[in-house]
Image 1 (tube, rainbow, N blue to C red):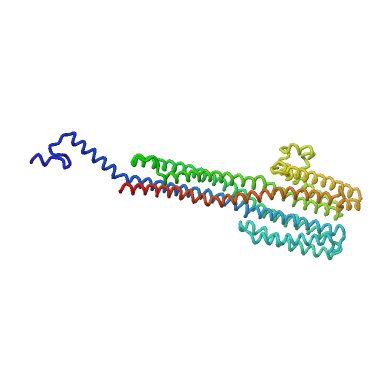
Image 2 (spheres, rainbow, N blue to C red):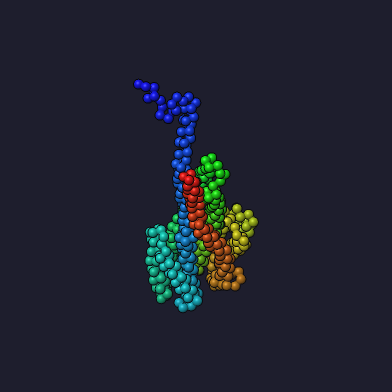
Length: 468
């Protein structure tokens, strides 16, 4: 066999070892150059894939906050407020019914007309609630119960209006309202409030988790985009790729805007739910309980049996304690240090949660008016217990200063003012959050298209240059 047959194909015949090494290095350089398009395409694919992942994470952040805002602003809260309004209208109707019999008015008198107006309002709100069911049987069942028993209540009231001895029928109507109808409405409130609390907590936590994932993926994408720039600089000896740099800068700006918007949404949600709505809820409950207590005051004077009167007194005291606990002591001494009021009634809880301009004074006025109303109620019961029924009756239905109806109207006006302050803040907070949610849609588009287009167009230009 000749020596020529053993010579490497690419080695120069008769060449030295140095010549052979030189040829090998040239081949290696050619191999590396041939790999440039593949390397650029791999980086392009990586950046596009990361961009899609970032977009998906950002979408989940957006969707989580949108869901929470819709639950708070459109689904649960309106239903909760409606439930408490139904409760207040029913209790107010019940009070007017008692006043009708207490004052011995005709059915078409002032109290009778007020009763019919309040009952009709309750019917309308119950019908609206039935048409706006979100959580299935949890809402449907209490609404059906309230509607069915309200018809029975009105039947009993109709019988009482045409019967001379109406005490037993009024007691039956009172039992229906107090033990069955109002608790059904409370159940409707609780069903929505439970969903609100869980959706709010779980939704915000999920959004935070998705946002952390979004930030981590964004950092990876930024690193990948910068590394691609560095690689192209090493190959093409150009400091920057203008298209990729523009995409990177727009992407970073979009991340910053996204973070700012998410912080705004979170803050607006917290304002709407924790600062405003929590106050709206306790104030609405306090208003409904106050109407119920007012009815028990009238029932007390209507009944002549001592045991029945004692029961009505106990019912009033229970409702009054839920509004503001009698065990805590003088309200005036504690208003300056509201932290001590926590857990001592609905009005006390409202004072602890004061946040907005004008709210503190309105809440203080509400509490003071309620304390005065309860004090007048004690005077009424003392007069009745002393056999001074006419004086007790005059104090109960009187609208002059320091009489019961005057004090109750004053309390209701102060509470309504406090309620309106918080309701307005709730509406504003939800409106701001929804506006920010809509703006996130544009940021989502930028988060996807800025890095994707920057990468595809920027690398494609370099691939074209390479082929040329």
